[in-house]
Image 1 (cartoon, rainbow, N blue to C red):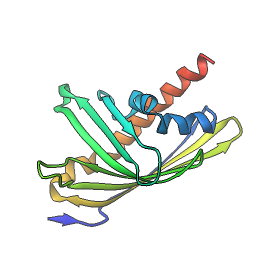
Image 2: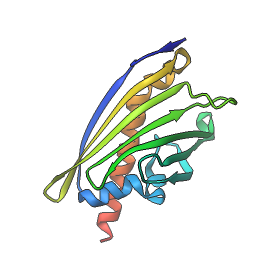
Image 3: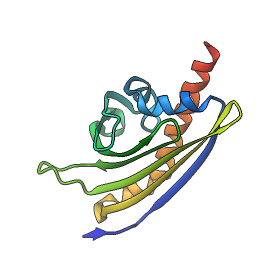
Image 4: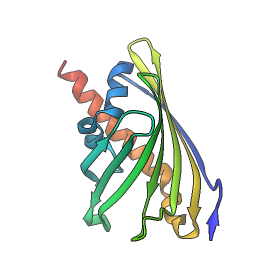
Length: 160
């Protein structure tokens, strides 16, 4: 059974990094791979075609947590560098290519002096009933990912 608009999440962080660097961390595949996913996950494959209609493809890997090679893919809807990134993500695709979870993600990057106000707005546009556990962990997963992003940026700033 499919549910519509089952969850919406907005997270805001003020990051101690310039907007251009924060935007790059979201759009450079190597940087994105370093922080994408909750704690315990790595991203051994991260590809992004940064243009409207371009593809996003990330392998999230956490065998110790029961997620070996979990693929997430998507389509870039909008890129306004370094202000806004909009993409649709699909997760848990089956053998036929059907995705039981679809999320519209709008990421905004607002300059605040030398810092950046980052806002992640995720709207679940399609989810099957089997996706309830994933939806229950969505807030925690995004927060852990953003914690990893914050740590990555702090390391980069420290070495500048």
